[in-house]
Figure 1: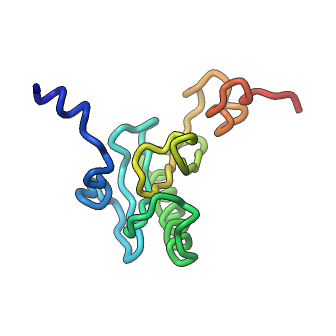
Figure 2: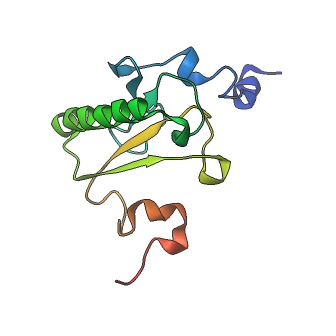
Length: 136
C-alpha cells in the first residue's frame, strides 16, 4: 500500500489527533488549549480544545466549558488584532449526523469577512443549505 493510500485510510481518532499531537498551540490552559485549524475555513480559523478526551460538548464539566469560553474571548482579541475580521461563527459539531469527524470535543471559532460568501444570511444555518435563507 502506498504512503498516500495509507494517509487517506488513517483514522483521525486512533490515536486521537488532539491528545497525541496538539499542533500549533496558541494558548494553553490547565483544562483546554487553542490552536489554528490545520484545514481552515477562513484566515484565522481557530479551534478551542478541552484537554480531557471526551467526544461530546455535553460531556464537559462546567469548569471545562468556562475555560473554553474564556479561550474563545482571548482568541477573538488576538484574531481581531491580526486579521481584523468583520464577524465570527462559533460552532461545535456533536455526533456524526452533525458532521463530527474527530471524536474529541473541539469548538470552531471562524472569522468571517465581508464578501466571503455571496449572502451570509442564516450563518450557521447553512449546514442545511435549503434552510439558510428565510424571510423575516
